[in-house]
Amino acid sequence: MMLVRSPMVLCLVACLAGPLSAQVGHDPSRSPYRDITRTKFLTITAGSFGGGGGRIGTAPHDGTLFGGRLDFLAATTVGLSLEFSRGTMERLVVNPRDAPATRVSGPVDQRLTLIGTSLQLNLTGGKTWHKLAPYVGAGLGLAFASDTPEDISGFELGTRIYLKPHAGVRVFLGQKVYLRLQAAVLFYRVTYPGAFAIEPPLNPGTPDSPNAVFPNGQLKEWIGNGVLSVGLGTTFNWPF
Image (cartoon, rainbow, N blue to C red; front, side):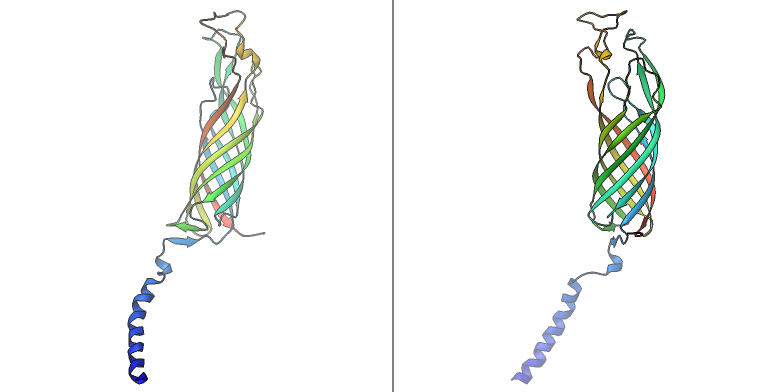
């Protein structure tokens, strides 16, 4: 009886082996996913810095930023980056002592420097999908304004802490070279001089029609600037 059953069992196993093997896994060469084999990324970036410069346009806006970015652990789900960028922006100058019709001048140029770090969530983990590696993240840093134009009001951006939520994608041209496209919003808080809440001495308004820059006395404001950037980068493992 055993001699009869053994060939039957072997025949059944042989018949089932084909379909089962076809269901387990797939051809790696046809997979849309590819491993990112390197852990560090260096990107040279250029970006457009937008926004309106706040309620009266005295904060830096409308300019171009150039810089660089170094990513660590970028081949895992969560990455860390260090960023630096600098550029020339525009801003308006407001003289709170003048009448509303003549108090605004400019725009004038002002240098802006950004130094920060960010955490990045890689949506495809340590892989690319059809050569794409999308991500979202949040950054924290310092914004420095320099070459401040003469401003009788005393307004100056100085040094500000900024927050920067962002989203983007890396487009891999190969294992070592990629393009980076990113959209971000940079938020920081400014404080305006007390003169902005006072009626101009030579052109005072009335309670119903005040001439102060900010007649409600609110001298602090959160400003958001949109930043669109593109970068060209390379990957490496050295030196750690």
